[in-house]
Image 1: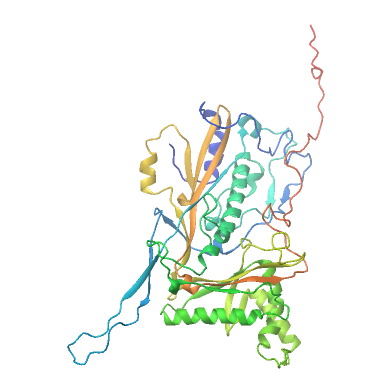
Image 2: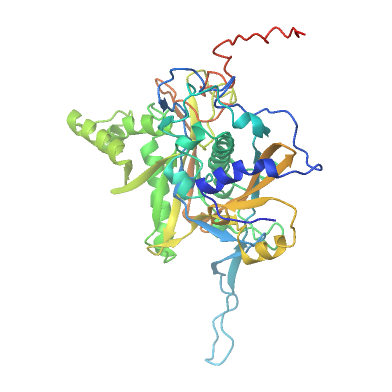
Length: 483
């Protein structure tokens, strides 16, 4: 087995050497199914095509790319917490040396679980991926924009070094980039929506920012001291006359700040995380609600006099700096496409044009810098991994991104494909410092485009195989053999 680091030169050399790799026992197909980039039917084989290729791909974004990513080999870790001291039992003694009341220290363990993400490239035939029409089929295309942002690449959301202009000319790299896009989408989604009831998914923050916390070693043993603060906005419109989003958010953050201070865990670095559509609507109504909060008469009408310019300036500052002022503190706001969104198609409480999702308070660090929300990955470059794969001499495998992603070659004769896997998880060590406000309803003027292909707001279009752009004529074209 070959194990190596990864960069563009490595992959270009790898693609060039594929014709020398053969195995009659592989499962890869023998028909080229990957879109070609150049040559007959190539996406970019149009004669006279401008060199600049502009991306219209929507990339998912969210908290996953800002969480620290650490290696681990533990499949069933334990994270201990002291939950408190019991009430005293016994009575005060009459005499000094008699037994006095006693109490017990109590603790609770949490755990975490890896999930596995797997994607393959399409089948490729070496003869097909190296073709071009002729000298008029330019292979010096320049990509403007991109598919996977630097934050995702730096933080193990997707494999690195498969972007840039090479994906417009090297089919192997283009296929690996497609795998990277799928991986990024899945990690961003599972960071929130990961559900252990679904095969190979890790538990997302939706399952961890919750009440009903239990001990990892004793079935059914509740640990309410570790419960998160969970509130229900009950599908009230944030711009309506029902529940007040300022009061709910202020109450949640006051509760969490109280916990952090009294547990001696402050200072805590929180971020408020929500979908981008919710953030835009919330930032529009927040200034007026915030500045007039509790300034109401007996009928519920606001009696505060609000300066219009002050409202506009506050809204614009919030959007510009991505902060939400709560209880006099500016909390950073993170917009995240991976958060589940309710709509009229999946929730009977909503009508067309209405949407609902949650607002989360996520503690990133405690005590001024100790990480408590972070991601882990199974390390494919660890000494144990290398020792176990070294005896396997007849397989082709390589890891990338310091061991975050593992790639395997599968080929028969001149046909091949690549498989990728990564095992990751998100860990919340202090659920008692996390909170959420569920079922917050909003009615945006326009819903944003989605990076997820199963969404009603996903858009792509175009083709994967372009019809041949020219016809060729020759004396032998008719197939008539002359003697």
